[in-house]
Length: 227
Image 1 (cartoon, rainbow, N blue to C red):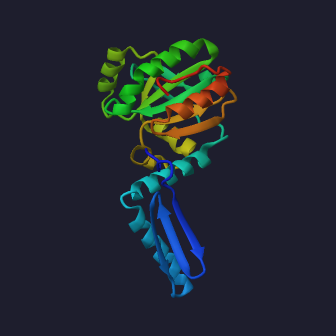
Image 2: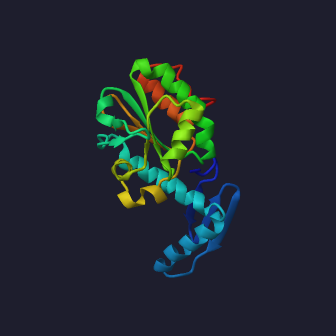
Image 3: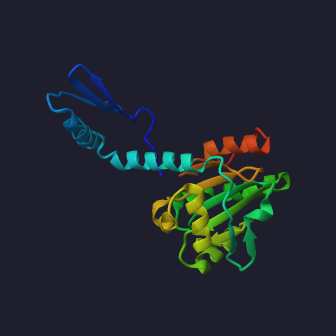
């Protein structure tokens, strides 16, 4: 998910009987001589026109903000599911560790690009009490198994079965049945050693994720890929 680029925030200002709005370097002004309840309708329509084609990005940015507010500092929900080879994966087994929950798919280009960095992250910090649990949105487990073997993944991968959907639904504050369609990939949920959700990142937010991990692991050198 992409948020608005720097300098492209929607701004609406009132001055006397003039309304002005801007997105980046685009701006418009118009007088208003209408009844107060008409102003709201006009502003909504005007913002959509002005922001187009940035409308989807505005919505995406708002969804990201909502999910972060819904999640931070909550105890991590229960997560117990078999991995793609049938072994048990239980988040409670990693209590006391820093855990990165990673929602992804083999067909996601940015997920593919980040694979080597995640393997390296797990290898370097596993002894420091760090663990990755990847949750695949692929439909066929065999496709994920082939990907796992091809890239020699060193962290467990579970499929987005109902119990995994419930985990993300509870963690992100959305309904279980919306998870697969509403949550973009990649989505990252970082859990601290206290078992609480530390942060949520939507999209390829490797720089912000690296900064958060530096604090949780107490290592200023943490860097994911080229973040």
